Length: 171
Image (tube, rainbow, N blue to C red):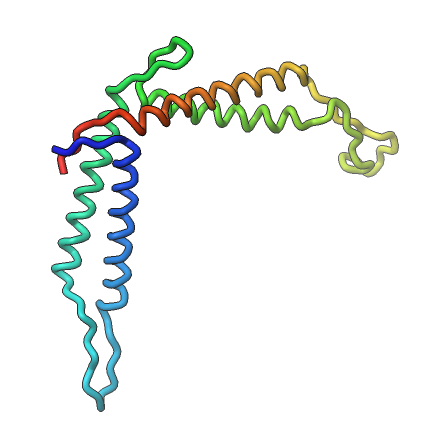
């Protein structure tokens, strides 16, 4: 058993994925070769069994680390604004808030009244057409600001957790 933080575990996963990519590139450049009939072939240094075993070992380590992260995320809790949540709940909530923030960002950028191009909807119509918003622009801005602040607060709590809380990893 090894103790590690979520931040360290994710760095370890990145490193293992880099190692796996390196092995795969060596494999791709070594599992076939071309030789002319009238020359001695230059056979690349490649051992299928060895490379496959190393890739399998890396995949097993990654799976164990990811499992430990997921287990820790489902069992460890943090508190933000008086609300106690598991880490996986924080992650889901942040994704929801980010989606809503994007929607509100689009809405807050609209003008209350915009003249549309003539002929956009009907070639026969000569009177100009206007597009109007159907909501309180100030309320949308306030809601956007509240969500933005909540995302920042959750991110700070999550960053602190990722850097400080250790859990066991069986690798």
